[in-house]
Image (cartoon, rainbow over all chains, first blue to last red; front, side, top):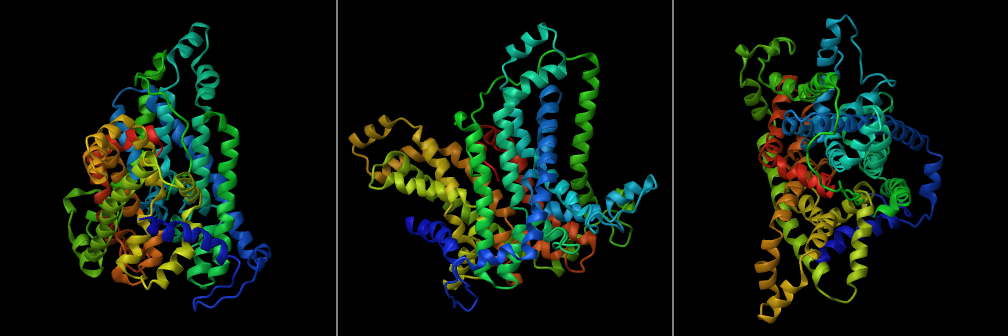
Length: 271
Length: 290
């Protein structure tokens, strides 16, 4: 079993670093090129595009999903009525695959006979080609991913909300604090570490976006939904430029590492 | 694919709502909740409706008429695509992985938690370190490794590399570490061998964790996309999730795509329906992420 882990867990990690310093091709032939792949990345306009797309997507997706999961968690916490049922409904998309979500929403967004444009048509709006315009494509994909995944963060935030000591809230109420004030000055500060955890998990997830783009847009229109992992996938499995693709993977690793280290620093005392 | 961070601890308290709500809130909040729930469920409902709608008609709003429901889309998509074969592949990929990952992870977790052996700490930290590396960063070396073993487009290549699941080992080590040492000492004094201790003491005690982890491993594999996409290159070796993605790029009518989508989602829904409580509780407690 240790062999299994050595071979398939450790070797690929070491291999990624090694490959990124070579020009490994599909033939298996390679030469050592030192940091050439990285300098090539710096001047590659596709890499810049992928980086900008991934960052833009992250900036749209993370607030969207955190607000959605916090909103539903607060609603579930406040309303006792059928809580188990509603929690189940919100969690349902989470157990399905992102590919399924992408297939469903691709049809929902469709300009010709999509559900959303049919509904908008009833109030004489559109049709809007949500996935066909560079201005709306990333937001549309972000909505899809948020729909698919918000149930996870919602559950974690709900557990956090339920752990806020009730005596604090009661004391604040006696002192005359309204519901917004209680939320803003008691619940939110108490929730801070958990909110932060959710923020980091969702940010890391956003940087790894690929499946939804592959299925919904193929990276288009004109590479306006072409993420880092998409760039990695194309470099590896379309151009078979394995060394270059490995370098992209390490850049991704570096970004994820920095995000987690920032989290460790900021909430390190809670561990 | 894996979650690399430890969640901050949460104290479990009562499920009762926050104190002091104004009368207005009593109606607006449930209404808001219901509306959000409807919006969440609409894509699924639309998927099922379109999957059962007659293929000739418009997809919307004719699809809403239950009088016209038909299984035609299902039979067509089943006969024109490789869905039965993809289902077998997905089941193999998921179920074999569940069994092996549970076995390996509980054994390795037990060793890391309760056994003393040289280099234990270093090896465990190496495990933790691999958790930090996103799967996509090791995609290329893993693929090259599989191709060197001549395992591309085979079940070996699909399944074996995913069995080295560090997150599962980590979870098992945390849980088994909490079991009292006296238990193992007593068993040893009574003359129980390693294998006997593992099967008679460890396994029965970790059964709830095994169940939870099993559900997650199943969902990870059933819903996985990038690895099966890269490894299963011929149509015969695709999983259901990859197959669904290829289905909708071909000129397959939308009713049939939705019928295919409905088929892929059934196992997830079964897991969800039967084990929802288990899943939601374990996320709240441990922060496991599928």
